[in-house]
Image 1 (cartoon, helix red, strand yellow):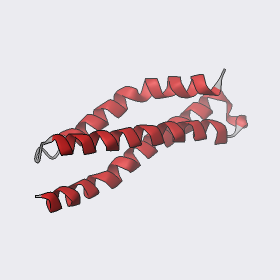
Image 2 (cartoon, one colour):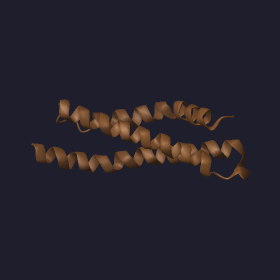
Image 3 (spheres, one colour):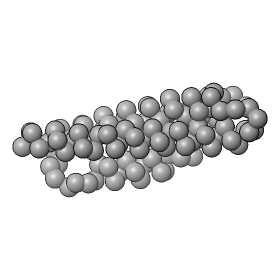
Image 4 (cartoon, one colour):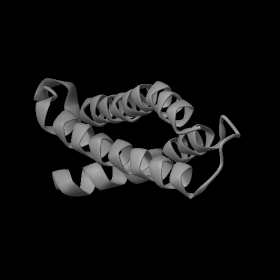
Length: 103
């Protein structure tokens, strides 16, 4: 199977989890709510999704061939989820510091 197709399929299958975590990131804290906050949140989610896709592709190429096809998908998905959560965990305190200065 093509690596690009496998990466896309794994990302699509994991997309509901990314959507739930991304929605929680955007929803909390509830204030301040403005256009600047929405743009910042969307930018963080776009970076998180892009890095997640890159991590997933890297996981497919870096995983050992001895584990079989399923192990490649498990490694790729774990790396993608880790990259997504890593970006959000870095962005959360930065966002609070940034909006504390804006107020």
